[in-house]
Picture (cartoon, rainbow, N blue to C red):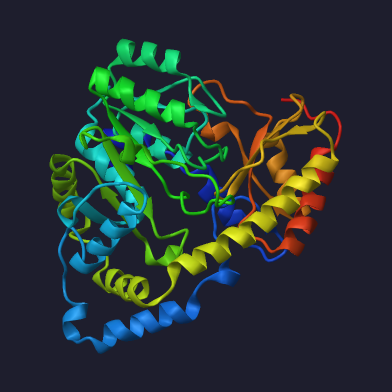
Length: 396
């Protein structure tokens, strides 16, 4: 039977990362593909204790909850954002099922068929999938290690009048870069000038490797509190299975997103939200985040040093200052998309860079995740990966 799917499903795309993860579930495969945190340092006992406290609090904990989220948790999120310089209140915080749901809800209320979204290039591929699913045209702004090029941004804001600009300015996915303070301010100033919204995605901001540096969120620069919608998640700092993220921004936008969420899932899991509340109340999350930072920095340096030994003639990559990913550019004759199958056969996986691009893809790029594998597995996996990448005559 030919099923009469809605016309918008024609733009639905399978996630390249998710497709790769299906293949890499085999025990012998060392995966640098997914954006997975380290399971060996999950706060398992703290999470278990938090759920025990929920079940001890009475049957009401198992009831339906508010669409906007558990109020005590929203109050804790407000405090967390204040430490980043972001002014908010429980009324303009919406708790979501991960920050991925924020991208979908925001796109749902903002995008009509043919609307334009400006992004970095490369950028988070699952965000691109969402924008395309709502019929948007995604336009790339020229970007470098400092962020979006201000002149190209100005030209494209004026030319396209986009509905919003989507950015990951702190430890971006896939390339792990950090925008300079000047580029952040340029973006905000131009969006003020052209009256354009910014969706600031900040899933990795807590995972910074250098305590003496400060990366100011765009939302904290938005003194008018009118142009930046900010989203983050507990998936990277606690555990992904809680599926708890949040969004804050202008109250009119948050209220509209809450209406969209009501139609989507009524509310995110009350049980998980309340467990997270008890964990944040009674567990030293800041100390745990410091542990994450130290361990991920160690794992990153092992991967970095391995690539450095091969020389810049073969691979080029900028050392990330935080986050979970290393972005690598290989010689132009290497097609990483074509090589992926061979790599998996060899027992290692990565994500080819092509799906992350809005414009012309670079087939010699790839993303490596350093957070999930142990130091020993990283060394072994890099041995396997390089044995594949060093094979001669890989044409596009």
